Image 1 (tube, rainbow, N blue to C red):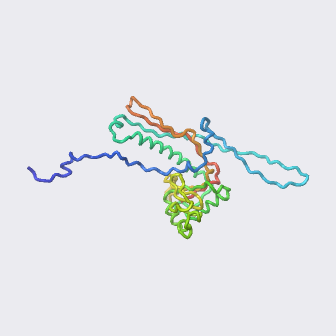
Image 2 (image 1 turned 90 degrees about the vertical axis):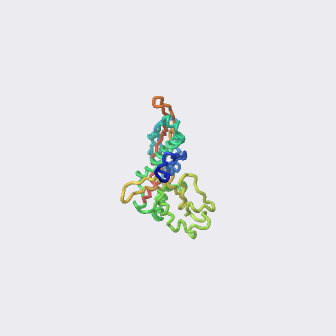
Image 3 (image 1 turned 180 degrees about the vertical axis):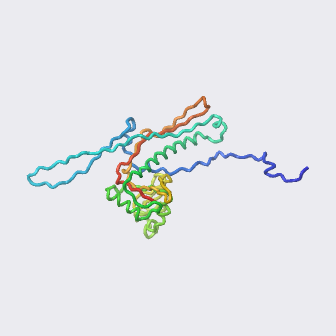
Length: 297
């Protein structure tokens, strides 16, 4: 008889491989855009139609009234903004019976959740992609955001009479270190003992009246503007890569979901498999160009 030890190689047939029922779920981006823009026109398109016509109302001019002279009436011709419901997106998978029977994991439930995420990401991507139509920009490609870049963008909104409330920033997480590296945003002598004592706070300071917002991805506030992180922020080009962060008021962009995410399943007897399809019907567009600024980094 040959001498030798029993090793993992010689005993390979006795050592099982274990497949854990706990799966490694793909990470998901913070999808914030749809929660931060104007969706008040959504109710008008829920039942039927493919376009919402949004009529402008212009400001009037104050004139001096001269004695014994009739007033002059302004001729008013208003424009219109059309919100078209033209995006019908879907995600789908097909699960064979043999897999459903033999798998330790409930794959149908896990992938059903993932088709919902796929559609939510598509909507978020379409909103963030509206940066391409903006006329206002601050910052430079490949260069971190600075206080001056943010202040310049805020000035754009101020000059457009954008209300101070309901302003938001959506930035790539790579810019958080840049913001945290700006002394006046984080130093105690600049921020103050309580967050409410200063207009410049980060999400790391939650004392006083300052509380994190409900929207996923909330990072903090700068100059009273909520900052949200998302890896879904668009990038273009190479050397340098242009990252298209956004600073905007809620009314800069509009969206309407005519039919929310719908999940349908059907059994295909020819395939001996369950087919699952989720779809959503919606539209997005820019409403007020001067209410948004592309923050390049």
